Image (spheres, helix red, strand yellow):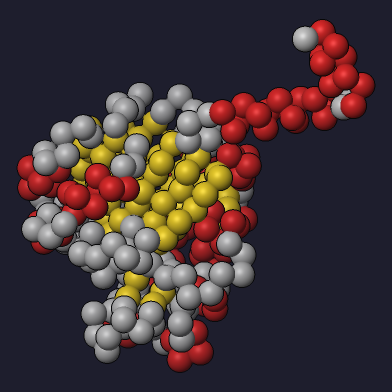
Length: 287
């Protein structure tokens, strides 16, 4: 054993030894599995194969957007998944609209609902869980609407949410996931030319807002690990056989702090999982 240790020190410098040891420990660690899914109505999706699909995915953390139900209705639905603790944020102003939730196998240190800005805190769009090593945030970013009627509001939302994530990131790493309602690059939607500056989710204002978020010290986990993959979408319109033709958009993301970039070992999209006009997306993370 001593001889092997001597040969190891002879072949590797001190810095290389540290890097090698870190890599070995990373391989030995059990990754955490995070899944995000815009369910487009939790009552509707629970009538389908949602429970069995969640069990197949087996996430440690399941983040849901557009639950479209009261907190009581969401908790009643997710009681069919008793292995999870549930944290639910519902719209305060419009019944059956928006809404987010996180289901977690491990209880957090703390929970925060919304972002602390009154005009943005009425629609149940954010849940944040704090753990020793990270913050987990799920978000349903406002849609700019038909004819872009809500684009100005979207711009103010992006600025406030960016400030919120930056504040968290100053304390510990952030994992932010959900429906960001923007295709960041032309590779992220099937028809970029016909939608650019005409359709909500692919205007320069929304693109710039997302770019500014990444510049605050975050990265897009899927695009980081799959920089040139085309046809990778997480949302398809119910019209014109969009899903069958894969005429989609990638608008569901895991955005993580740059300092944990090397800890994200996998980022996956699951178009085969049905039940919503969105499909689940996931990351595996080793801390």
